[in-house]
Image (cartoon, rainbow, N blue to C red; front, side, top):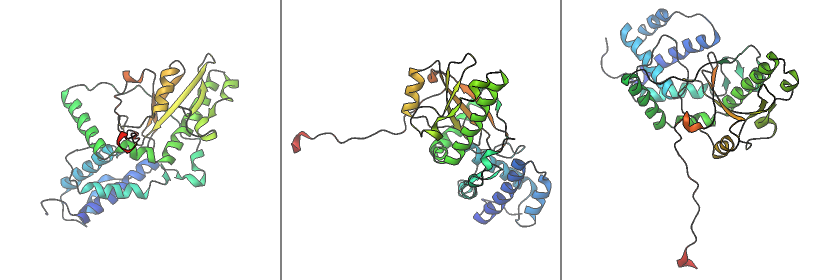
Length: 284
């Protein structure tokens, strides 16, 4: 059996196989991991255990990049740097595809069968080892600028907002506030960005509820961007504003809410600054 670093060709083959299983998982189709492993061993000179561990490495890359991964292949973070381009290439191929539902252009975002499960915000790490693992993954996410990558994925952002729009209407309908449910608006879609929130909804007592949506495919701790204007609205209207953090969108979408002050929940780190030229006394 081959030893040493995996070649680019081997990485390409195992990543393609992994994404085949991942897409089956996202679509709810059955697949057999052992059969995939056997098929790979027929094409590359690696052991069963080596291939299994490489699958876990791919899960780790996907975790770093804010994407979902195959259940059962727990991320193993000590992956070769050469694995990243192979995974990133496969991700680019599906960027215009709505998770498991076809393209955005064919109206698949209207799929009413997708429901949002509300969960508790992530707990604090249970021990030092877990804390160190989370810190390592977040450090790698920063290296690959994952927050900016998610921000550029406009279709994913719109899909998450649409899902939350449906959730808000259903929430109000469930508590017999039908008139309020009819008045829920998708502000960012109807009026454009800039309001400091995406959805105008209502709390149970009828007071305004301003929902800013942040969506990623991967785990709940994936970093995301928040604008100066969004922070300003959160500060000026803290009783009305909330952040809906949607994650695992491709799989089984989940969300939790964060209420101001955001400093209680997230570490806000400046990553960009606006630069303006100073007037030079020397040039008059």
